[in-house]
Image 1 (spheres, rainbow, N blue to C red):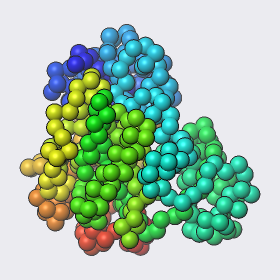
Image 2: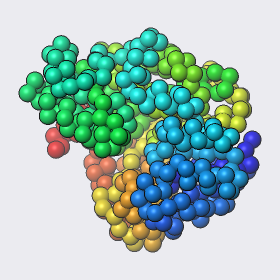
Image 3: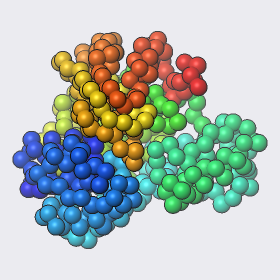
Image 4: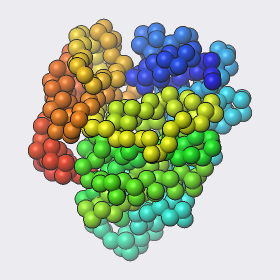
Length: 438
């Protein structure tokens, strides 16, 4: 087992990893930007290293500085968390070059899954259902021809990156050219790669993902599914497990597709395979996230399995001490993402308590939220025996949560979990449209 791990991230996920390491008896190294010198993850770690200026490109996106900090402090492994360099070939490659363990898949796997067009082809060849679509399109003219063949509505998607960038919905022929050009420009600015392809729009659909753990022996275990259909601009707002739309038979089919996906790219460590599920019960591969997911906590609550600790164990070569048959999904868990609407100082913070309530956050009273990073302030999670009870519990916890001084979306989340559409479980990725929201 490792004696020291560097966490190449910030905020609540850095804190989450540090806590897991402490429970495992592993020393930790925090890296931080000049803007994050007063952040909680810096004070919680055993060591800390400033790696640059306040912007991500000066610090958290600089793979060379992160690896240098690991070498300087004697860290044996680097945990990338999620976001930033968690799916970065350069960081994974530098770790391999300097004999530092990257807590995640191999650089080759990251490369294959980072190219969404290549990922589609790999999964299709492996027998995983894929959405009807195209290869990479060379021009607007090619896009127009392909759109006529596939039919409307459709999605124009970037080959690289994630986070909802470089994606456009196209409902009619006259929209293709503008959607293609703007999506390509956005993808080029965000990821340095403007290549695009087209997929048929599956509508209405549920966004379902399967949590995966694979050890170095190739044993692939599925830890249930999560539903992530409450979204705005392709950004998830609420996640729950299990999904009301998934019965045992469908779950087993999702598991089989997930195992096929993992085998096709020789996957190792924690990952997530994301699917779109239509109203007829057909599902289609969307993408594979080769990292820890923001919403991993709800899976931990219903399975009792600490995913972060198992990421570390797998990277250290520890085989599973349990099987697929040992994994039980108990009760229901819901997570609401609490996002900032503007920066500011936390004047007062009250975190809800009670049995099976968890709030993963970087906040403390007096902390000033910097303007350089993701808007996520924390993740409020609950676990209960039934979905109905979980909804009541998340509603109560949201009503109790107070973050004074930083404009946020708590009130909006209260509206969402109170909505009859959400409570019924019959909601889709167009949940906000179903509500009549703009």
